[in-house]
Image 1: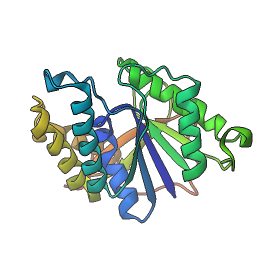
Image 2: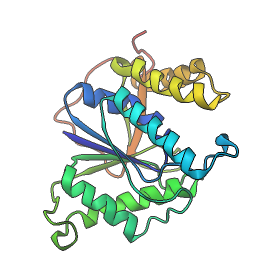
Image 3: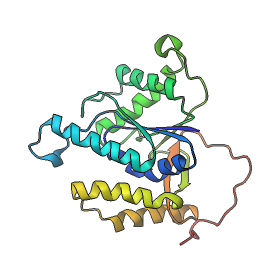
Image 4: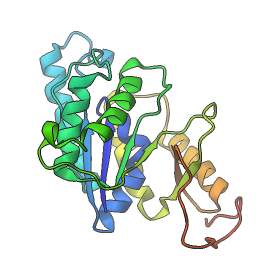
Length: 230
């Protein structure tokens, strides 16, 4: 499977890091795409946008290496994303080249305008990548879109058992936390992911939503929720 993850800024991928690492470890191709370099991040004080962009691009490269993913930065400006045609077309051309079976991104209602715009650009790109006159060799295979979950969106919730790659997710979080000095600790991060795991009957999980429920080849077995490993 080819899995593409599209986010607005480096560090947005933390909530999907276990899933991305899991697919990479299984031998799937994973492409991590950032729409911007996040050059207006306030944590950098008086550093120029150019310097911030350089550092955050290095961060992205490091994290992609931890995950086992390929990566790309698109040339759009931080806080200037609109979800419009130019952004969607850039993503559509990437999709036509990479040919994903699944795409993972931000939810459509997040408070950050760049996050909402990223979702809209992805949604439009999934249509534009099917048009040969726009992208050359079109990508017309079915693609399932997943996004970060929101309780106020009534869409199917999908849990991914990331117990196998929890150490990778924690390494990604720890890398960013050490740099930005976030008040959220590694223990806090681990506890939240353990709670997600309890919902699905596993030790650690990440959750995403999708517009339509995926069809299983049969009823999945396993422990009931609340009886995860560990």
